[in-house]
Length: 455
Image (cartoon, rainbow, N blue to C red):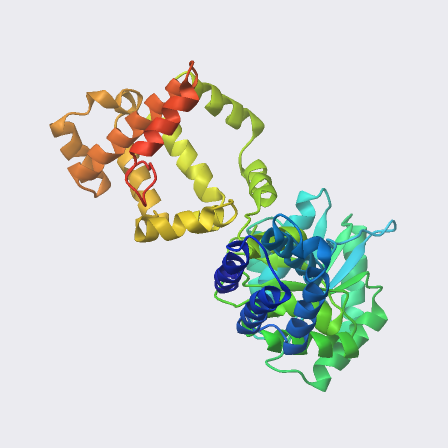
């Protein structure tokens, strides 16, 4: 999402760090580029101007300009201000000591509110709670069916309000029904519109009057930029909103909504949607997001994703097998599947320090989902014995494996060769001088490429 902003800020910072010493004019020139980068990212004009003014006020002080690394000090100031701009502290659901905790999800039609409701239910369940959904979007055709289908895939119960005495009374009865069934969190998926209108606001106000709502979260589409900020301001004023859920943060949005919410209307982003998969909803961490924007990576999020998808036993077992040189192609397939569970490769590399530079260097050579599936198909077309002993694969076996996997004998050969190189390298690391040998192997790699199986 922030790729363009990251690139623009990188250029501005390169100019600042290229000089051994800075004066006030240098700082002004660098911050002018920062302001332009923010404006191009669709950040509110007033927010961008005030952001740069705060950084300039601190950057022209003697402590920065007379520092041995003034450029780095300015970057540090920008990072701190970015964290504050994005919300400062993490925000998340707090649970009522008297269940159920009721969360009202509001927003315009098309923002992804219904799918977000299911994603939030899964996140809540992962924290040890028993969530239920209330299908209060009775205006949009098939909205209830959509919620029920999505929720059924993940065994999340859905209650449909009975509306003979009005929607608000039906939602209140559904919440009480969820409480009787033992659910301690109730997520209410409300109606949306294609635009803001008074009937929508009145309906939400009636629900809030009939139900004790603990949190009201507004779901907005990050792709709509400053329009999302305007919509959030209207909902906050007319209905009351505690926090924001930004969807489609993995898309081509420039980031203006995330960067403007708190400064423009005083609302923090609580969660963000980062993909289409059911578990692609994450807590919004301002400090981690600031690191991503500045190209520093987000190792903590990468670790958390890995811990969710890969058990400690699997990780220890794989580490031991790699150290002893006992890896097989079955292990390789297992690791491929684990890698795909973490998300697209571009997303994973984006969380690693230097990952963006690696992606630029690789260009189109970076394997996508289709390439990873092709590698898996090659291995699965082998016999169990061939997976344990790839050296058995001769020319006739390569042709058979290629036919079975829909690939070519050359692709089969590249996979086996790459796997053997990786296995030898991992085994070598366990002995004396292993680190030195790894560096030597990496130095043999042609410029602009990295060692990659199937490369």
